[in-house]
Length: 117
Image 1 (cartoon, rainbow, N blue to C red):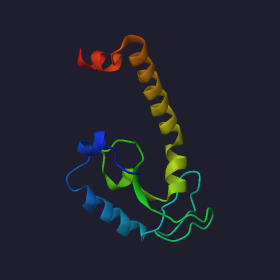
Image 2 (image 1 turned 180 degrees about the vertical axis):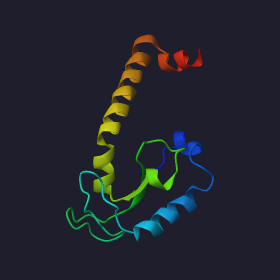
Image 3 (image 1 turned 90 degrees about the vertical axis):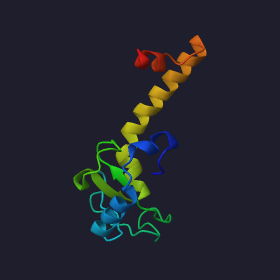
Image 4 (image 1 turned 180 degrees about the horizontal axis):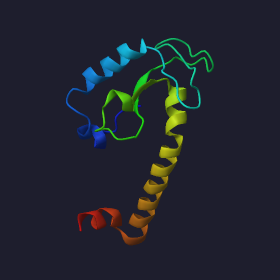
């Protein structure tokens, strides 16, 4: 997944080197996820199930960009990565909608004010 600009500073300076190490470990193929443990989709090739072009990305199992231990990282195709992150995405989307409603109701971001206290 692309790194969001607001999270870029959370990644270590050697992130590109870490990604290369994970790519070497995986043989440039998907390492599979709990939902699809046998997935071995090859980078830049058609996905064997979906047919879409595979773009492998490195994902954090604990969703914490600072935690870059190799045991916490997986090289995933879009299908595995999105499936693994689905619950996390739903939670963050809920919080984003909740913050947006707070801004609408009060004209300010209450979560930011609370965290500054």
